[in-house]
Each structure stands twice: as C-alpha cells, then as structure tokens.
Length: 160
Image (cartoon, rainbow, N blue to C red; front, side):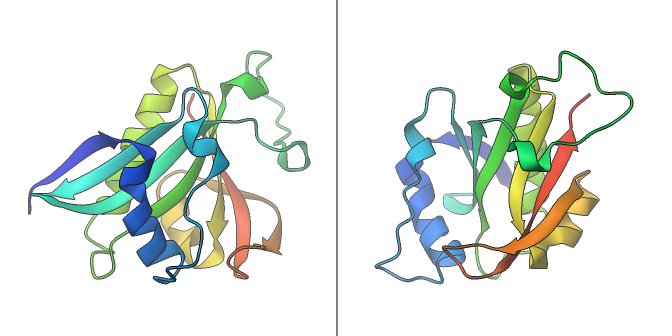
C-alpha cells in the first residue's frame, strides 16, 4: 500500500462523495456551493492510481451557536481564521487503513499554513470516535442533518 496525498479539483471528489456520503444514489447532489469558493482546498488520498479518500477544506467561520468559549481565548482567534472540513469520504472497504487520518492531518496542516486557528466539521455521530482520536472535541447539541437524515454533532479542533 503506497498512500499519497494529492490536491484535486472539486469534480475529482464527486465519485467518492456519491459512493460514500450519498450511498451511491445517482440522483443525489454531491456538488457543494463552497467547492468553488476562493481558498477552498480539495485533498485526496491515492493508493497507486486509485483515489481512496477525499476531503474539502473551506475558509468559513464556525457558526456562532457553536462558538467555543474558553478562558484562554485569544483575540486573534477570529472567524476569519476558521476552516470547515466537509465532504470527508473514505472508499468502502478501506476504512481503518489510516486514510481518513492522513486526510485530517494534511488538511489541518494546510489550513494552519493559511493562518487557521480552528477547524470544524459537522460530523456524523458514527464518526465521532474517529474525530476524537484526531484532536476534535464535540461542541453543542446533536442534530439530524437535513440531507442525510443521520445524527450529527459539530466538532472542533484548535490548531494552536
């Protein structure tokens, strides 16, 4: 297994988004409005010639209702320094191979290089243990995602 991080354009993420995040439904939309936002980064993991993981990283403030209040809050930790992880997908049959962890660490490193102080995501409850292993903390109450109808929580990771 030779895993490598690659940068993609948004269309390069679509097949895995559809397969993993939309259960292969050909009618389900896998195009996010944020895909074309300035600064958005799309990463993939390849195993040889095969794309086995994708993620998108969007410069977007953490919604105010999930703001993390801490005594050590730094004034420079402004919403302009927040990035959202979205569209994280690991190929079926490849979960547990370290692909998701590679994506998270590579994405957080790229966001930090852009001045990010915090990364956040709307995580499926089934993936909360994974996010916890990678330094994310759950904030706020859970909710059911309107698109997937699955339970989610917002997770955050500070990059300080």
